[in-house]
Image (tube, rainbow, N blue to C red; front, side, top):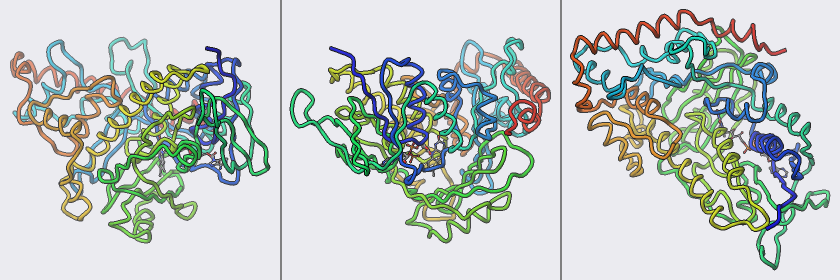
Amino acid sequence: MSLLQDIVIVGGGTAGWMTAAAMSTVLRGRYRIRVVESDEIGTVGVGEATIPMIQRFNRVVGIDENEFLRETGGTFKLGIEFVDWGRVGDRYMHGFGRLGQDLWSVPFEQYWHRMRALGRAQPLEQYCITRMAAKANKFMPPRTDFGNSPLADIAYAYHFDAHLYARYLRGLSEARGVLRTEGRITHATRRGEGAHAGHVDAVVLESGERIAGELFIDCSGFRGLLIEQTLQTGFEDWTHWLPCDRALAVPSESVKPLTPYTRSTAHRAGWQWRIPLQHRIGNGHVYCSAHVSDDEAAATLLAHLDGKPLADPRPIRFRTGMRRLAWNENVIAIGLAGGFLEPLESTSIHLIQLAVQQLLDFFPDRGFSAPDIAEFNRHSRFHWERIRDFIILHYHLNQRDDSAFWQACAHMTVPDTLREKLDLYRSHGRIVRRDNELFSEVGWIQVMEGQNLTPLRHHPLAELRDEPDTVEYLEGVREVVAKCVAFMPDHAAYVAEHCAAK
Ligand code: FAD
C-alpha cells in the first residue's frame, strides 16, 4: 500500500502545534503538513502546568530547555501541593520522582508503613527530595556526577505561558516546513464512494478555499470540528464521577518567593489552581455549577489570590469525558477535541504528547489498517481511564463535611478499576501499576496518604529487618534528603541565572 502525502492539522492551540512540531521533526519533510487555525476563534489559552514526561517531548523536537523557559516565561515544577483536600486544614504535596531508597525485598513505603504504625517514622514527605525541595523553594536539575545520590535523580516538569508555548512551537514547526493557513473552517466534506467512503477529504474555509488531505488531525478544541461535528463519533460522559463543569481563569501579579510547584486548594464545590510563572501567576477556579453560582465562584477565586488580579476572570465551560473513539475513519482527535479531564494533576498536555507518540507508532499508509486503528483506540482509552481514576481518587477520598458537594464525592460509586486499587491499598498498603499506566506507585501513595487513607496492615516481608535496623535505615534516607535539599540553589536564583525571560 502506498504512502499518504497530505496531513491536515485542524487547529493551532497547544495540541495543534505540539502535533505539528513532533510530526515535522520525525517525518523529516516526507509528508506535506498544514495547520489551519482561526485567529478570530483563538485558543483556550490555559494549560500551563505539566508533568515530567514533557521533557521527553521537548527533547524529541529538539528544544533547548533554557531557551524554551526564556521564551515562555517558564519556571520549574517539582510537584503539586494540595491544600484542604482530605479535610479543611490538611496540606500535602504530590512530589515527582522517587520516594526513599528501595531495598531488595519490599518497597520503601512498606518499611515506612510498619514504622509509622509503631510511631517511629517521620511524615512521608521527609523521605522525598522533590517534596522537601519544593517546600524550601529550591531547584536544580539532576546531576549525574552525584552517583547514587537523590541529586542525580530529581524529577521535574515546567510551568509556562500557554500562548507563548504555542507560538514557540509554531516558529519551530514552520522552520521545519509546516505550512499554516489562517481562516475559519465552515465545514468538512467526505468521500462519497470507493474504498474509503466516509473519510473526510477536505475542510472548507469561510473564504471558499478548500484544503484537501488524506489524514486529518482534529485539534479544534472542545468543538471537535471533525471528530464530532462531521463524523458524530459520540462522547462518553464522566460527569457522574467528576461533576465540575466550569472554570474561571485569571492571571495575577507575581509575588515572592517563586515557588517550584503548582498549588491546588479545595473550595466548597471545586478547587483553585495556582501556577507561578516568571512574569505572573496563573490562577483558576474549577467548580461544579450545580453547587455554586458563577458569582460566588468568582468571588472565591479573587479572595484567594496571592497578588493583585491582572484581568477579569474569564469563564470556560467543559464536560468531562472522552470521545468514544479517538481515531475514527481518517480523523484522529488530539487535545480538547478528544476529551477533557480537569487539570488537577496537569495531565492534558501529557495526553496530547501520548496521542502524538501513538500516532507515530501506528502511522497509517493509504490502506488505513483497521487492527492498527483499533489498537490505537484501545491504548488511548486505557490511558484516559487510568488518569480519570487517579483524579477521581482526589475527590472521593475526602473527609470534608462542609458541603453537599464533598459529601456526594465521598459517597459516590467509583469505577471498579479504582475500587480495586483502594481495596488493595487498604489491605496491605500495596499498589500495583498496570501496563505502564501513567501514575506510579509513588504518585498513588502520596495522594492516598495525603488524604488520610491508612492501610490496615503492611507487607509481611517488611518484618524481615529488625526494628532498630529499620529505624536507622529510614533515618539515613531522611538525613540524605535533608542534606541534598540544603545543597540545592534557590529556585528563583536558578531561573534568574539560567533562563530569565527577556
Ligand atoms: P484550543 O486551545 O481550544 O485550540 C483550538 C484551535 O482550533 C484554535 O487554534 C482554534 O482557532 C482552532 N479552531 C477551532 N475551530 C476552528 C474553525 N472553525 N476554523 C479554524 N480553526 C478553528 N492542561 C495541562 O496539561 N495543564 C494544565 O494546567 C491545564 N489547565 C487547564 C485548565 C482549564 C480550565 C482547561 C479548560 C484546560 C486546561 N488544560 C491543562 C488543558 C489544555 O489547556 C489543553 O489540553 C491544551 O491547551 C490544548 O488545547 P487544544 O489545542 O486542544 O484546544
